[in-house]
Amino acid sequence: MRLSPTHIYSITALLSAGSYALPSPSTYPINTVQCTDSNAAVRKEWSALTPAERIDFTRSVKCLMNLPPKTPKEAAPGTTSRYDDFTAVHMNNTLLIHRNGPFLAWHRHFLRLFQKALTDECGFNGTLPYWNWPWWSDDLPSSPLFDGSATSLGGDGYYNTSMPALRNGNYTFPRGHGGGCIKAGPFANITTGFRNFKVEDALPATLPPDTLDYAPHCVTRDLNSVVSDPGHQPDVVHELITAPSIRAFQGVMDGSVRNTAHLSPHSAGHWSVGIGMQDQYASPSDPAFYLHHGMIDNMWAQWQLRDPETRTFALDGTVTTLNNPPSQNATVDWVVHFGWLDAPRRLGEIMDARGGGSCYRYEYEEGAEKPC
Ligand SMILES: *[C@@H]1O[C@H](CO)[C@@H](O)[C@H](O)[C@H]1NC(C)=O
Ligand SMILES: *[C@@H]1O[C@H](CO)[C@@H](O)[C@H](O)[C@H]1NC(C)=O
Ligand SMILES: *[C@@H]1O[C@H](CO)[C@@H](O)[C@H](O)[C@H]1NC(C)=O
Ligand SMILES: *[C@@H]1O[C@H](CO)[C@@H](O)[C@H](O)[C@H]1NC(C)=O
Ligand SMILES: *[C@@H]1O[C@H](CO)[C@@H](O)[C@H](O)[C@H]1NC(C)=O
Ligand SMILES: *[C@@H]1O[C@H](CO)[C@@H](O)[C@H](O)[C@H]1NC(C)=O
Ligand SMILES: [Cu+2]
Image (tube, rainbow, N blue to C red):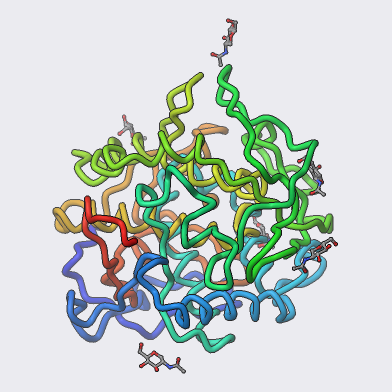
């Protein structure tokens, strides 16, 4: 079937967590009120939040870290909290949701489910914030996101002498000043129940059998502006927003230049925060994941809004990571999974930020001066 962005969906089947029953097309969520710029929830850059709003966000995230998991122990022994429920689902789906057709849609819905849990289970009063890459790319440790203050997402890690080198092909990045557990701020010393995957482990055709096992450790950081700076320049963002097709958009988002410091904007955000965020499986164990993916989602939303009729449901790529093993092309009827977080969803249900029961927009202006 062909979905159009002007299609109105019903809100009834919205987020029926826990059920594996696939919603039928007639129960697709509907926005009962037309979603417009004026009634959409507004997602803002971290620095645009008041100190109280930032603290409300980190408090709510820590609240999820202190709630019991809903994932059954046998299904994912490493799940130690409600927060880990999200990491578990991301890990379990890693080989189906990266560098492929479903990537943008799956992560969009994942963020929405995270927002819903923060709001419903922890009284979060705001909208998910995002990380405007170019504003902070040349000095992450001084940014409002990572300065280690009470209104940040926590700072760098403790210095760890055995922090391995980061390599992009034959290019080796100089290491940063961390590598250990998060040293200061609201997320100091946070832990995850899951193992850490190395970049070399990242792309097998099947999920390693110990993926969801219990292997607790602290979330580490190694803030590295040598990584973020080339990948997060304003021209990279401009290329994303002005990409002529979804294939070109995804190519910029994930197409690193081999053997150089020029990582793609997606990889640069992950690698510049540390080994925990670099992990393609368990990266959501660092809350910075959600703000980085907020910016990715923002870029996709800006791109879609430039031509909603043809772009809202545009897909390119197959349904396996790097097409390994070879698979079919993604379509709006392809079903993706969210474990115990939500019912399976067709891509067509979760691609529109202003439809399918969703109604949000990003406060964003390309090229705007960064705040002091
Ligand atoms: C919740 O957000 C609204 C709108 O931003 C604000 O007016 C209200 O004071 C907030 N409530 C709390 C408890 O923070
Ligand atoms: C790294 O350099 C070696 C030797 O020049 C070369 O054989 C290899 O293909 C390079 N690796 C990559 C990823 O380009
Ligand atoms: C230091 O880094 C190494 C390599 O990533 C890791 O195995 C080790 O657990 C880290 N140590 C601490 C204290 O974080
Ligand atoms: C984090 O853990 C280290 C090592 O156990 C400890 O010295 C430090 O006080 C902890 N920091 C915070 C803020 O809890
Ligand atoms: C999948 O998409 C590619 C690229 O658009 C196209 O060349 C190919 O024919 C498609 N395959 C099928 C089976 O539709
Ligand atoms: C992981 O995915 C499989 C299907 O591939 C599913 O059976 C299982 O319940 C999932 N586990 C979690 C924790 O989501
Ligand atoms: Cu991901």
